[in-house]
Length: 119
Image (cartoon, rainbow, N blue to C red; front, side):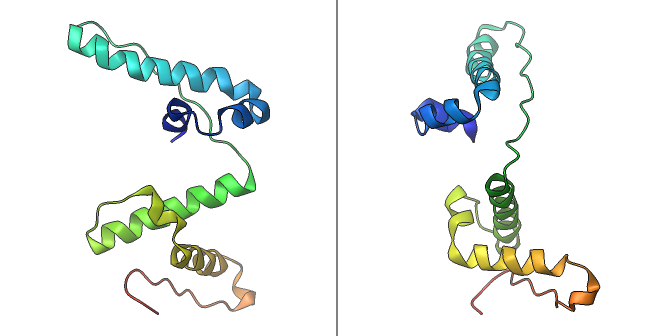
């Protein structure tokens, strides 16, 4: 959640240095989301919230994949999802196995995805 990290001041300078073109869009989106709560309480029309593209680096793509896998796992187990679930070493292993299963068939990788429990 980019807006949450920005609001908490986590990695703001590094993020600003690496993504100067997205910085304004992130700030605008966060401000409109915050103000829409106030405007809704006042009965005023809501401001349009702009869409901001995802960061397209290999690490960011891998983390998005791990978060999606963690959400699926939490749903299958009937647990509430928390972002720290994606950092679980078991989740990293499962995501790697699932990624290997999507490779061409000539690699003969078996699709093994452990949804719950220990292996």
